[in-house]
Structures are given as C-alpha cells and as structure tokens.
Amino acid sequence: MPRPCKRRRICGLPSCRHFGPTDIRAADMQVITMTLDEFETIRLIDLEGLKQEECAGQMKIARTTAQAIYNSARSKLAECLINGKELNIAGGNYELCDGSAHGCMCGCCCRRQSRNGTDTADGGANSEQGNETV
Image (cartoon, rainbow, N blue to C red; front, side, top):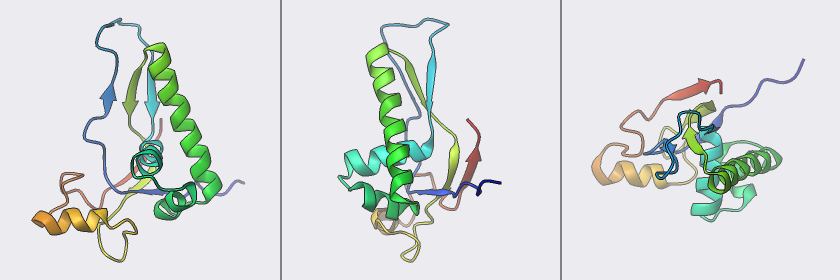
C-alpha cells in the first residue's frame, strides 16, 4: 500500500482563482485546473525567486516532490497561454500556514499579521486546511 500523500504547506490563498481569455467565450472551452500547491510553487519559485530546495523546505515536502509539482504547474500554465484555455485554481492536498513565528518559515505571513493584526492573504482564515480532490 502506498504511503499517504503529505499535506503541502501554502502561505496564502490566491486573490483570484479563475483566469482565461477575454476575447473568446465558447461554452465548450476546456478548463485546466491548477491545484493550490501547484500555485504555491509558481509563487515561491517564479515570483519570490526561491530555489526548488528552498521552496520544498517552506512547503515541508521533498525537493523532488516540489520539482514535480512545479513542472506540472508550468505545463498547465503553458497549455492555457498557448492554446487559449481557461485556468481555474482549486483543490489539492494542502494546509494553510498558520502565520505563527514557529510555523512559518517564509516570514511573509508574520509580516502581514503584524501590519494590521490580521492575516490579509486569506481573509483571516489562517488555520484552514484543504483536502480537495481535483
């Protein structure tokens, strides 16, 4: 029996979860679904500039797992951009960072909380866990 999948730590939920071409509105347009852990690897590696090993450490997963998730996310982004498909961000096996100094390795959650006393990235739901099947 395979080992159960570890929850991947993410530091916040995306502010917008649906993207797509504005010039095409076909009812039968294919929608590509990117999981929240795939979104997090894109955020950490491409936006924050972390190496895959640092990304893996922050998400509490193996580097090879982070690499596989990242490659899957990039493939989905390319499919949407090149073929004009819609992108939906949802699901995955994740836990939302609690923003505490002990639980957060990135420090960005703590900085957001110290600014105004609440976590602005996830609307205050800083202990949410997700286990959605896509």
